[in-house]
Image (cartoon, rainbow, N blue to C red; front, side, top):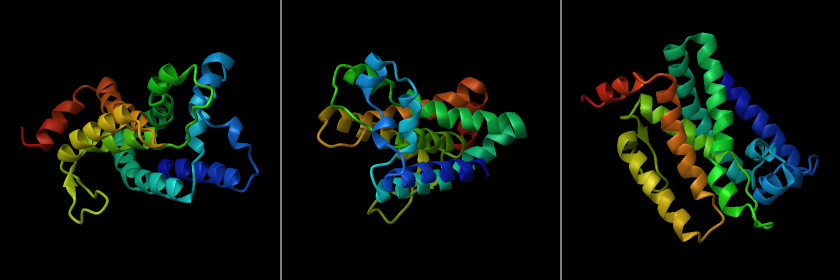
Length: 203
């Protein structure tokens, strides 16, 4: 249910931005404005804005499938109320945490901009892998699902390599740090989740 609410809020804000009803420039992540203008709210608001319908659809579709898994496991691990609260904290804080690297790197670049919930969605995806490491994940153009424990290191290596090359307009470093945060957050909250992870792998 909370996953659906997060999707609804994000879709509403993004669509209002697409329609020109909201000022996109006041919401996007601008490292310069955050650092020098002290507009810290941008560390969160940019996660509600997307670069287009495809960007919004892919992020929300991923959140829909994997968010429900994490939401379910969080309520089992932490209880109904605490689990939901921690799930929301994970998602919202991941928006900010995933952009810290770019904040430091681009704080003096007035032209750097970023939008999208990809960092937070990566956190949710990797949290789901922590709970269900053998869960099949489909990768674009590959018709067979890849187990999460294989997908995870490949994804991190890809994000690190693409961030280092810096050849496109995709926030690969946000994807990388969001994914790492998605693994660490549940373990910090409850370290014995790691035993569950190992047991799922038969270790």
